[in-house]
Length: 299
Image (cartoon, rainbow, N blue to C red; front, side, top):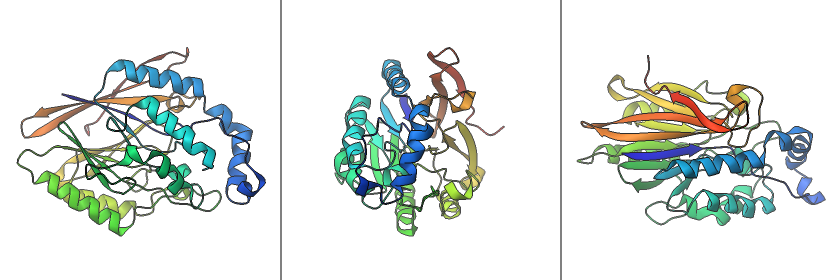
């Protein structure tokens, strides 16, 4: 049995006051949005409580699917590293970046320079996507959909080369004598219709078609700040769960907009794997508690 925790979109704060030249870009609108409400929507005390609960539950590995940063300031890169260190050592935590991590040109490169150890594959390369990490019966395939975008857009893209490389990895894993449980990590919802066009993965159709050819056991994402479970077709009619988690720091009013994380139990079953998941997060009373199971099989 392998226990995998998944959290996403912590939007670690607080933000330092930017210099004027740092605001001569998309960061200007992002900083205004932070001051007008995002700084209150993302509560660092909630995030600390959630991480403490995660650590207390017992797990073998943590998947973090992006948006450590807010507007891609250089000061955020060291803060992001401190957060990842609190989650766990680089060999126990796997990170893939989100759109806020690539807020403007150069932001993603700066973050990966600071936090690359949490993205290193088994080949030792850091900040190279896709990457592969083998942990027990699980093979984690990390993808980057993070790209700089224009103001008021939050789209993502994988690109043909990354999709082809991910396909090769997934095919090779499936061909092993005892195939591992293949878990794909990406920030944006990877399926068409997973979010609005201005926030979508632009090549979601191409990626989903690839998954339909080669399969995976579980796809994890963030970006939407809500819990969600969708299904995409895999080989031989299999229904592959695509699961999104809420923001790990959100102090929202609505049930699905409050901070939470997911905890998966992966067990070998015959020639495949049984995957079960539960959500733990912020309740109406402000405690961190069990919020119920994730429905990972299509009715």
